[in-house]
Length: 67
Image (tube, rainbow, N blue to C red; front, side, top):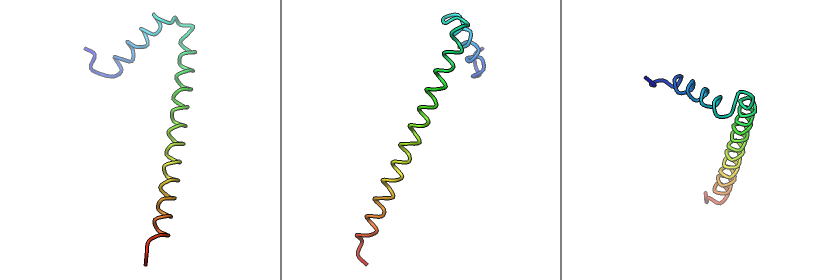
């Protein structure tokens, strides 16, 4: 009966309306969107830092290797 994600999404929306009321749904969606944006920005920042550290480690390893 509830095999697809669409079914669960409909149930979640109906439950949210029942629990929070229709006036709170836009605020909830806005907060969720901001949270997802913050998560993506944080993940991108961590990836940049890791790449910078890897590049620095590669540069250091390349300059100290004997030829």
